[in-house]
Length: 478
Image (cartoon, one colour):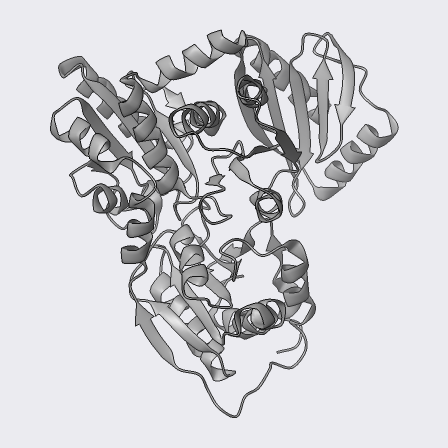
């Protein structure tokens, strides 16, 4: 199959493409056995295993793509544990570790629109493989496929049972259940037609109010991404409930493969992980007495290290991408690792983002305090004397040439002033993060694969955030 390999590129978390165009059975049959081979070379000496986990989400034909993956992998001599149902991606990462497998191949395109599918590669340790592993896979794609005289076997398994049992052991389930059954707390879960469907109720073993739980490969015409523009139904549902009932209410939002989370407070306000992570740091450190480092990406809110400082928690900062957080989790004791886009993981779990575990910790924080999520956030702002707002926009550029021109401009003509404020310093760990003289910041990052500019800003007020982002947009389009 000469030439097919050069069309398969792994991004920050896997290979994704439009179904029947870039993502096909033919290409999957090429990449899957090579991925298995690379996993064996990377983790075989540690595990002594010959088994690959294969799982999938609820996208169009995901179970068929998973079956094809399993067949391609067994054809070259590996054994496969094939999921008998959809499940969250972190459930398959956990299965790789618990079954002492070489790793996991997961059919998912995460939060992409319905026209996409994809493949995530997970290591034996229970998290995303590092970039050198996916580069190794890419480098072998135009060589002959590995062969084997003896094909492997396919067995099936249910990933939910062990996953739910593992998560139940990490929180005070009795307290959460009693709050729900006594009517003190109403929980809403928007699973966005994705792999978290049924998950929270299965873990808690009490009913929750689940929205968009049907399988819809078109995701209602949007994308299964926990962003306000896709959550109008959840906002309206919670506002109506709160007007009628008046008890504590929490909305939890899960992306397509349930590794990213957002929340909604009792008044129907959207809370990104920029809000949730500070709440979770405080909860885990104070209520659970957990220890370890905070690992945040460079785009994370300044409130995170301020809350960490209250409890003498050391802080590490990484480029954007959970794989960098996972690397740190493998090196040292970590309390929490989080990214602004909703991926949060924990040092007492696998080195992987896990939205359902995050949801359980959020519910535990609410039930232990008896407070609405926004009230918990406001408490932290007061404790740290730090009040801010945050937003992000993804700006399409006319071409990759425009991208190159802007990048060269940033490198050769550094910005000295932004939106009327002097630039104090510029951090280049990932893109360009400009700290301004009022302690606000603007971050400019370029997509590595498409002409898109990612703009992030945190400032004292949302008006200042939008003023700065508009300035950046004008700069980019000027």
